[in-house]
Amino acid sequence: MAFPKKITVVDVEQVNHDSKKITFSLPGGESQVSGVPFGSAILTSHWPENGWFPVFRPYTPISAPDDRGTLQLLVKQYPNGRASSHLHSLTPGSTLTVRGPIPAYTWQRSTTPRELVLIAGGAGITPIYSMARGILSDPEDHTRIQMFWGVNGTRDIVLKNELERLEQQYPSRLQVTYCVSGPEGKPEAVDLGEPGRYKKGYISSEVLREAITRAKAGSWGDAKGTKVFICGPPAMQEAIAGKTGWLGGEYGVVKKEIHAF
Image 1: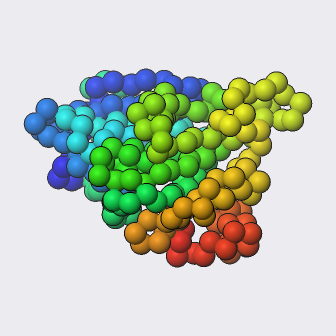
Image 2: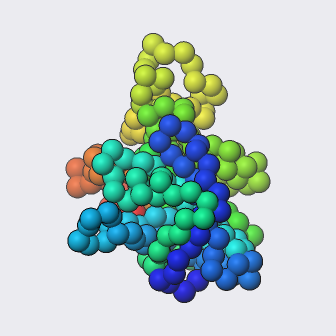
C-alpha cells in the first residue's frame, strides 16, 4: 500500500468502555492489500481545529498484511489524547490520512523449534498480537510463543476472541496468559477462571518464571538472538526490561536480546 493515502471508515465497533475497532477501506478496494508487515505501524495524521500543526501518531494494524480491501485499527481513547480522540470521533464515511509503513522488526522464520516470550501491557497488545499472528500463520515457521498480557480488568481483554482463535488453530505453538491488576486482580477477589490462563496482579518475575524455564529448556530466541518482545507503558517496560529490570537481573537477558516496540 503506497502512503500517504486517505483511507475511508467503513465500520466502527465499540469493544469496551474506551476502545474501538475501526475498519477502513483501502483506496484500491478489493484489489489492494495494506502490505504493512506484521509488528509494523502506520502513521496517522489530522489537523486539529484551530491548530497550527498536524497531529501524528503511529498505530499497528490488527488486520493482516494480506487482508484484501481493508485495514483495521484498535484504538484506545486516552484522556486529552488528541490522536485517539480524533480517531474515536470518526464514523462510517470519514476519511483518515495515513503514511508508512513504519518498519519495526524484520522477522526471520525458524524451520526448527524455537521459543519466544511476548509481553504486552494494555494497548501495547497491538504490535504483540500482530507479531504473534504473523509468526504463527507461516506454515514453515516452527517458533513457539508464550504471551503475557497485562490489563487493568477483564473488560480490557479486547482481543480475547482473536487470541483464543489463534490458540485453537495453533495449540502447540501459542499459550496466552492474562494478568489482571485492577480490583478483579486483588487477592480477595473471586477467581478469574482457569489458573493457567488468568493471573492476579501485574506481570512479574514470578509470573514469568515457569515460561522462562520452559524457554530455557529449548532453543530460546529467534535467529537474531532476540528472546523477548515487549510493548506497554514506559513504567512497565522499565521494570521488566530496563537497566535494572528483572529480566536482566534475575534471568540474565541482556539488552540486545530484548526488542521493545
